[in-house]
Length: 175
Image (cartoon, rainbow, N blue to C red; front, side, top):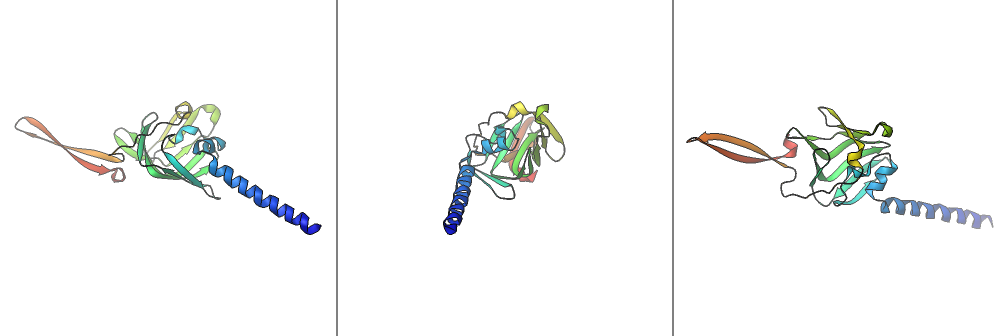
């Protein structure tokens, strides 16, 4: 009888682990963000294929392809975005850039210190940018673009009184 009781506990334990992992894998990235004190709209609704979250809270979000969305300014999502997920924060973000003053700057951290403040902080390396949490309530639409992640460098010179402009493609990582 004691063996049956032990087997029943083991069965219950294995079943709960299976159900927990099924729940995690079937939860959308947007629900996961909400459960961790972040707004759902940090990742696009139309481009996320899947995500992995390991036991150390290392998050990897897989998108269909690189794409561009708009919050307050334009943001570029690489095909994989990585970060450490904590309550209220995505720390050490890789694969996400934000356009500021015609430059694409990598987003380092995204933090909600106090949800009641209504603010979210984006650390873009050179500065910390605070924005309204309301901008991130709904996941944005992300547009895959042939030149997503590619910037154009303008080279101009005058010839015979006319302005001649040439463009050279620059990868986002060049900035």
